[in-house]
Image 1 (tube, rainbow, N blue to C red):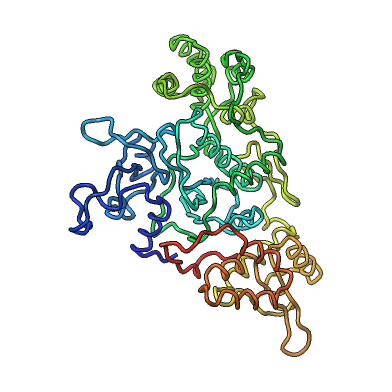
Image 2: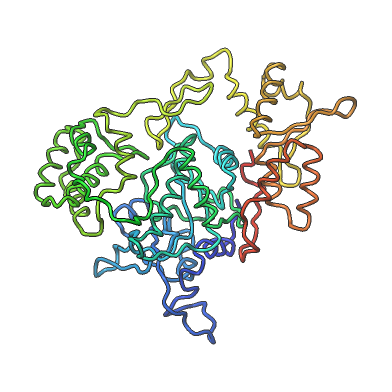
Length: 511
């Protein structure tokens, strides 16, 4: 997308939702002379590289003006606003404060999609999964390792410490279920912090931006509850009555399972050695075990990993963090993810979700492996490969004001090298799946009109409001079967008019 500086500033404002001052409190170069400095607001954090982020070397930002001054110089930020941010050293190089307990308001949910070598995932796959969900992403960023999907709230979800930060628990349930939903088909990183650091929107990484697609928190909570019920997922619930005293976490079976696993290692998108030590250390801490005893057991665990062992300094750092007093006990969510991956005492390799016509196996919701013979080595293509070819072909043939493409079946079959009978089956299946729509006109001047679901959606989102209804009517006259998709889109819980302007999305992947 072609993003101008003023567009980027509007995107920041739309995400931050007034959580920061608009102008610097001191030394502002932009605040009108007659305007008094704004009162106290929150803070966010910016990082200039992934390496700097890993060691918390960053900048505390308390105004949108500070973001404007650093246009495209940050790679990561915290889009959710914290009460305060501070530096841990006199040179003001290393930051602290980006913890859940310090959250002031949650503005957005983020889904981190990590695409490893040999995996396949595109912006179209994300849009397809989103359309099935019924919530179109507010923004999708293309990152060096995959994508980050933003679902921005209509209004901020303010955090209080009431009932043990129950508002954070509710938001975490929503975030976790969104991740689980996408992880059913896409390689989602399930282990990253829900409301912490994310990729920052820049002029060079915004794949798509739909400012009107923001969501009411209650709508997401209702969806999350239904998803949990349908998928039998345990969710955190407020404790409304006294419970019997629980046994110590340290004595739980999962701790023994992890301690005795000598195969645990680190991998992108998969909770590994460091997470295992930190989580077990939290169990020791919550059980009243001394830090020395905890270190002895974790050191033995680390030694048993052999050539996969962490450095002693990393083990000590994880234990010190667990015993810092900032955490109460190991989170069930992290325990579940670790047990799913490593609880068997072996390296993960059980099949998770197998797609039709694919040989993909997932050892964990955050990883997706494909083991299949290369297409160039096969005489015949799989049907799902023909579908991908067709979507890729149509992507280059559609644009905002004409999302459909007209051709003949013969020309299409020759172009994509798909047998005629197979092409008919592919078209029918894709229309039944709701991923593509087509209509056929016989006789002179006839042919087949085709449009992908993504192209239709982008058209409706892109056109000016005053002509949107006319476009919808025209689309439905050509593709009556698309009525359900259009109705679903127009019923999406979009907000009223925003300060952010609609950007030109014509150049993005429209499927």
